[in-house]
Length: 233
Image (tube, rainbow, N blue to C red; front, side, top):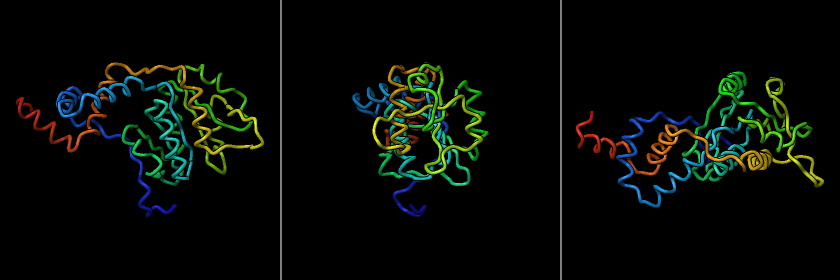
């Protein structure tokens, strides 16, 4: 699809909170329905930080969008995308706005992504048709980054060398491969189904503040008025 297509949107990482999370929550929870607030709290508490997804040079906007939507459905709040010369785009009709609730980390090349994830304790596991590990084995690892390569060329040699191992998505039919978004969905289900939400109290609070900002029209104005009535700068 062309970049000028109105169904496509650019990807950027989550912006920093403009005010302390406590102030944002105190100001905005007053203008959100209790049912909505309960839903936001439920999602924040269920977020899984021990699993993330890496897409290396996945170029179809529908695939990137579908992987993001599936990740959000499984409680994953962070997805990494490696550009390799092509800026990732999303098919907005597929994401249904899920990018508003997630952190999308864009990397210009493979090494920074790999190094950053390793520094945070993640093992990188690559989806591969001839993978040697089962998804059940991968699910036992404490912190996992599920890696999916380009739709046509697969993962780069650089990425393969960086991964802890490879896993295969089980198939019993005649087909020999799956769409990357389908493979990601199967893998995410297997790896997250027995993992509870694992964010710390501070992280949950920050996420709750972000969710509230996404749920209120002109949230900055509401917060500024709230702070002004309390004599805050």
